[in-house]
Length: 422
Ligand SMILES: [Ca+2]
Image (cartoon, rainbow, N blue to C red):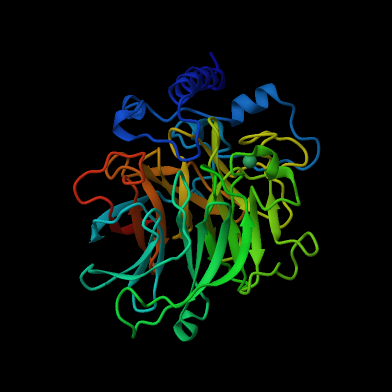
């Protein structure tokens, strides 16, 4: 039997098993970990996905050939166009260098302050904590007023002003009872702990809110504008509606206005057709990468272009359909369920909740340079986000206290990782 055919059959068999195993956890942040079917899959190679199966049943896109999405499997390299040995990325290794701090409750976002201290948001308590780089000590910088926690909502993203060193401004994305919104605070380190956040300035509101799919990641791009990943708020029709803020990546000025140069005049929308975006990162060339929760089939890593339509809910994962941009990499939801991402050492690093591991997607320009590698599988439970902290260092935030995990003593924590190779 030709190898490709054999691989395809394996893909179908394993794919069916994986689909059956996750049918009850179709949410964007499905539970998982040791008590779920993920345990049984732990010793099985990650299912082969996509490319052969898709191309076998779907005619190729008529015009521009989409880059082949890369599936997270060692055997994918036998089916995918193999990079030449001279250009193949070296595998990387990851070492856990220590626990920066622990005892966090539903941590969600992480920001690295000048000097190395960290800001962490706690989704349910609505607190922003400052963590000392020296000893991991935690101090409450303040509690964000007006946050309504519940489901996947609460205090979500944080972003530092690009001029934080001089303006001390912090941006936050959070849920109220009726919407998601973005505010800005002054952070005054000279004030007493607990009152270091000034009064919030409301910058942007009306982002659709629901018990699930609230998006929530915010980050400043290299262009100085603020990007926000939103969710479809469990109303899938919003993602393709250019007039809705749901299921989008938004691009805003620092004051919350639609940024100049956005693809749809007067609109904050930068890209559409998303289900739930919780990961945003730029590579050194200024390309924006975004992770996205799939429903029950394909999680995605996408390369974002202005005005791009990423397909939800018409398609999930790589479909090769005209008018929709296919992902660069995709995973079964049991293997990933990706929240925060970071770019470091020539790769996108993806924190996986249900997949309980850290994925590395090596990239070469606008495409994946090889099959994703996974690290720390099952070792620390659900992973909420990852941030780069200088060359070769990653900060990884666990999230076993979000109501879907199995907290263990010390959860949740921030780990410092050292990346070698790559
Ligand atoms: Ca998509």
